[in-house]
Length: 66
Image (tube, rainbow, N blue to C red; front, side, top):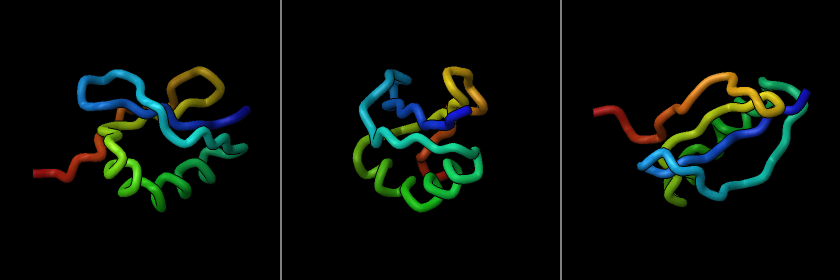
């Protein structure tokens, strides 16, 4: 199994982002914890975690809560 992030803009359309593949869900989540601010600055509005091609969870907004 492999894990990766799918990146979406504010309309929900998929956008390009770092093409990083992880062997474990925990590794993907740790990477995201370190990178989410940079992703948001690059225009990513939300992310979805994928295991192979199946959604694990998401989309998860990168916008600060009001």
